[in-house]
Each structure stands twice: as C-alpha cells, then as structure tokens.
Image 1 (tube, rainbow, N blue to C red):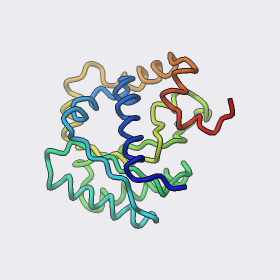
Image 2: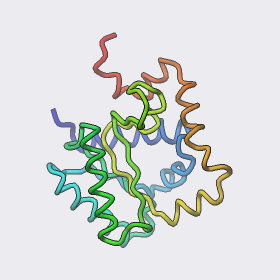
Image 3: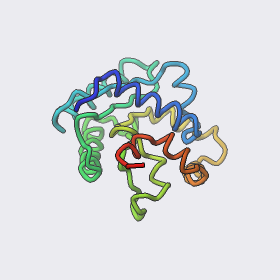
Image 4: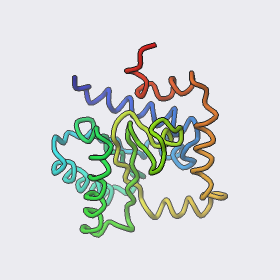
Length: 186
C-alpha cells in the first residue's frame, strides 16, 4: 500500500522535529526548521534514473534559491533495501561531482535500516541515522563549514548521539522510532 505524499512528508517532518531536533542529534537543524528553510520533496521516482534526475533538479533549485538551507529528498517508492540504497549513493555522489556540485553541496543520508559498518543491526548507534523512509539530504557545504567552525568540539557530535541513543528506554525507543517497531507483535 502506497502512502499519500502528504502523509510521507508529515511523518518525515515529525521525525525531524521529534528525533533529529528533539533529541538534539543535529545541533544545526533547529534554526532552519523553525525558519522554514528546509525543503521536503517526496520523490515520485519509480526508478533510480528518475531519482537521479530529481537529485539534479533539487541541486538546481538550491542554486536558484539561496534562502533554502537544505533539501530532504524522501524516497518513498524506492531503495527500501539498505544495500541498494548504499549502491545508489555512489551514483548520487558521482552525479554531484560530474555536475560540479561537489564542494557546494554535501549529501547526507538516512534509512529505516541504516547500519554503520561493523555494527550489529540492532545496535543503537544505527538509530542515529534511521528515518521512516530512505532520505537523501542535500546540505550547503559553505553553511556546514560555517556552523562547524562556531560549534564547540563538533567532532564529538557522533559520540554524543550514540550516548543519547543508549540512554533511551525501550518505551522511548518505541515512541521515537515507531516505524521500526510497527511489525513487532507485542
């Protein structure tokens, strides 16, 4: 069953607000969220080729609209398999390079089955990058550099995030990451 576009965007906004901002996983997300500078695109792509075209179009939109801080491309129809998603990221990165956007835009990513190399699937470290849908996150490189320069010990952000995930009770894990637990019988 395919979810309506509005529901997909709402779930993604809720995840961003409650998990990423609410749990302070990204100290830089709150301001652009509150200023409505985050663009949410629910991808209509039904193939990886179409998704690459959407990625290109989003970079062009960011080029033309400097008031937009960042774009989340939400892949509701594609790349459910994390391995396929990782393979696609290579193509997406090479597309940025080919179009001379490397150094202008940085591509971050999130996935419902995100798994850091060397981690067990259920390791809470993975939850720092788990989202309700596969997401390609385009960030302005210049803005990231500027924010990191002003933030105390930005290199410790990943460790803080892992510690935050490890502090969550089972009930909190199920509340914040309900989309991960929806198929588990209670």
